[in-house]
View 1 (spheres, one colour):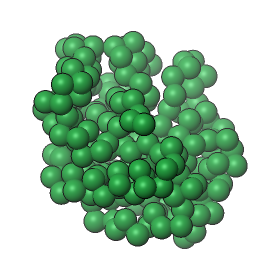
View 2 (tube, rainbow, N blue to C red):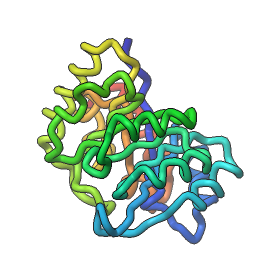
View 3 (spheres, rainbow, N blue to C red):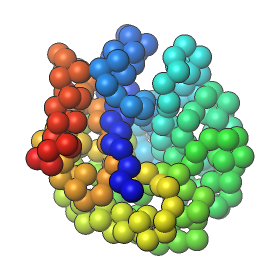
Length: 223
């Protein structure tokens, strides 16, 4: 059964001076889940936000939060974000010495778990852990900065992962992060994605509702 589409605005592109207002505005505009990018200036060449910001969000609003950990090592931060109210925690397999153990750690807090695959990360990292996954995210840019262009080879990789998910019979969402916008969202969905991270394509635009409605219209029509 085909899963519903989720639009996941990345607050990395929001106006941090007005972060709470930005989150409420974009969710009221029709988004489904907040995408929360955590960068450590070690695994990726940038430094962003931590669990205190996540907690300030979850204690004031009831929207689900999708925490994407671009950090190394990852295990020390998992409990902090779980206790801060994350709905999902995803991480890069390269950032964990024991991927299965990290997935178990996330789920031990009652949080949904996922793996994030960089453009050059092979799909073999999914072997033997599919049953522990609630979400698989493909990076369609190299991680570390917002506003990058979508890497076209991601489409073929999406199709491969969609086949893996469908063949498994498991309930796993397939997320894409990087360069997603109204002009390409239907093509990305056609390749198998059901969850779309969009940052600069939404934040900074004059009308968030109009952008999200345009994305959903293109998803519905396939163009």
